[in-house]
Image (cartoon, rainbow, N blue to C red; front, side, top):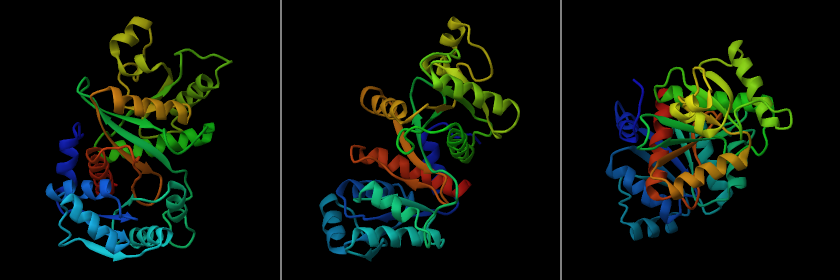
Length: 302
């Protein structure tokens, strides 16, 4: 069944046995607030890594009852991250989440050669977005990890997003490669890459989805706009995955939607051995909760 709302994702995450989420450097009030929300919904089980004294104090501040929550005391941030990663890589938890630790240090643990979650593939950020104006999820990628991806890296970014869409029940997602215009322009490399990715999809070099482009954002998501501009095809106006040409585009779209639009988002890092929740400090506890639910569902269904 294709999941179309975050309520359905939450129900899926907690059905048939809850997932366990390991949180690295969990001494953060916003993260613990999200854990509280998740536990109130019976969403998942949690193992928290970090300074136990700080974690327990902050848990008390936000009203989180730690009864039944495993807390593993580790005062060093890097070691807390490494232990959390090892906990996931050993199969004790299905999802990893970043707490109060720098992204660079966190990813260093994720990619550790001994205990890390590397697969040899590129890892990328997928924001799962739900707008009341549409009847489906959008998967925005990549606005957080890969700065200026090459064509080969874009192929992997698409595959990572497709994996998330498949886990949420979309068996053949439509991928729109975004650019400023919907026609190929030799002076605009994003449009050339988009056309190449579309041709690779036509020849089944990219599987499990339909890729087309270039598209402007409007004619990727709006059938009316696509018709008005004479843009046709299986993806035009019906896109599920929005493949951004580089990090600036993806990041600005994500933050614009977060601040100016009535949308909800859950974000996951894809391409590792387990889904990873890497949220922004500016994200609300609700967004962190939805990211947890999305990652737990991906872990369950992958």
